[in-house]
Every structure is written in structure tokens, then in C-alpha cells.
Length: 137
Ligand code: TYD
View (cartoon, protein in one colour):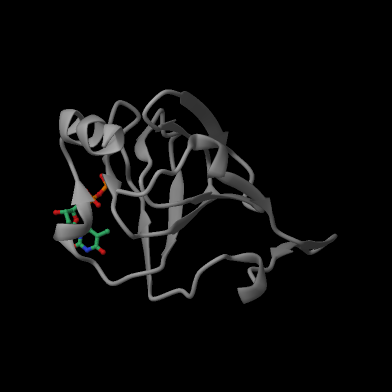
């Protein structure tokens, strides 16, 4: 598996246009380091729910808190990092080979995910011990 580190996980601030009619944020293709193949979103997430709990072998993702807030816990072989996403114009690029957990969803939170590949269960590593083993190789 890729030798990525939590330092490779970046917050991207999207340009926004704000006036007295509200705000508009723009995602242009050049700000994302991959071609988008799939879009999905998490919503109606109970505040005590725990999502993620896996890593991907090849998939890149861009997570955007369209509404509300939630925490993303990121782990590589050595380091753990927590990022709170709570601004609709600030998203998180997660590179392959990073363990992620999503938790602490606020009421009404919506997490938009732009993904680099089609859904493929074979790309997931869902067991944390397997993840640690693969990262140590
Ligand atoms: P999963 O990726 O484990 O969700 P999360 O990381 O948010 O906890 O997916 C949850 C379920 O949804 C799992 O059974 C697979 C299914 N799923 C799809 O069918 N297509 C998709 O594009 C995604 C992301 C998940």
C-alpha cells in the first residue's frame, strides 16, 4: 500500500462569492488533484454515529461539509490527526493509504464526497490491524 502520511492530507479553501443574497463557493477542476468519477453525500447522520473506519488503496477523496460540522480522524502508520470540517468552503483532500474515521456530526450535517474512482469494495481496507500491517511493509 502507498506510503502516504497524514501530512499529505490537505485542507483546501475554495473561492467564495459572498453578497447580501448569500454565498456561493466554487470547485474548479484545477484545485482538486484528481479527476472526479463519483459524487456521494452523507446526511441524516445521528450525532453518535461513527462513519468511515477504513482506508483506501487507490481512491482519492475530497470531503466538503456542505452543512453543519463533523470531525475527521486521520491515521497513517505513526501519526493521528483530527480535523474539524465546519465551513462549506473548506474541504479535505484525503489521499490513498490513510485510515479515516468520521464522527461528531452536528444536527443536519451534510458531507459531500468527490471521489476519484467508481465504488469498489476491493479498494477498501476495513480492518485496522490489516491496515497497520500493510503500512509496515
Ligand atoms: P462506506 O464507504 O463504508 O461508508 P462510510 O465510509 O461513510 O461509513 O459505505 C457504506 C455502504 O454504502 C457500504 O455498504 C457500501 C455502500 N456504498 C455504495 O454502494 N456506493 C458508494 O459509492 C459508497 C461510497 C458506498
